[in-house]
Image 1 (cartoon, rainbow, N blue to C red):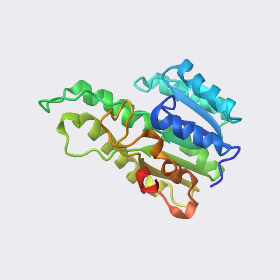
Image 2: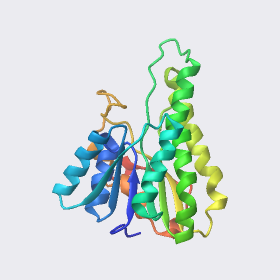
Image 3: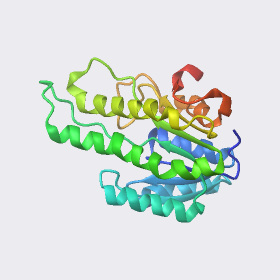
Image 4: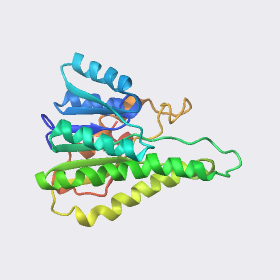
Length: 229
């Protein structure tokens, strides 16, 4: 799919994986909506994209707040006149490491809100307009985390997002809209930590693969960015 001239929303785009995805989409001519929790942080990315002759707009929203998520949807619809083509649900949080593997309910609540409920809400909001225009790409960032009960809240929230994608498949058939998962790998980001083996730059070009797919590629697939290095 060609993205030049089309609107793309990238959540959590002020740093790490989201920053690289936003810049890469802008380099391909997309009109990128840069989301973060801070308008000033989003604007720094917009300024960088603009210096590189790309087009971008800054927005802010705290994804742990359902009202803020609803406001984000309204902002995007105003900007795009309800014609968003690419939704890249990248934003996520990592809850604290629990040495005793006893995870408090508050960790689960926050993880599910930011890592699953907010992305699902954005999918639900923008899917109808993508279906109406007969074209769209939704990418939900997942994780390969396993066998770490100390991070159970994060792991379970990502597993729930994976299930959301799988169960949505029947409604996407023949719509022109693809929804897939992308695993960036273990990266040296604020979320992944300094001990991670991969630099954040290594997500490209793989992170763009599920955006640029032809419709025939289908939905419900897992794309691992490290496979395309």
